[in-house]
Image: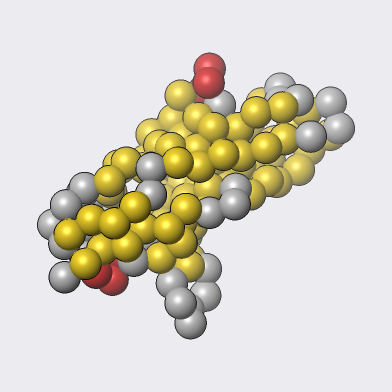
Length: 120
């Protein structure tokens, strides 16, 4: 059993910053990629940022230059530093651990989501 626990969401004014954290725990030998997704009301879930085990990153065009994803492999933890936040960044943010290898084999896992609200 693998669990992802997110923290760091909240309410912030436009132009402000937030830092999201996501820690994976359980039977984990390795994690291929750790990603952040978001879903705004009435919209599809979208990939915000991703980082693989080698530290290679990928960002949605809408957040490039404002968001930074990082990872502490030894802690199975991923972070998302969000700067210059805009009202359109308002969404539920989900952490995902892709290609998790553990005693039960290989699978993907999702966190429960954390709300980020940016006021104008």
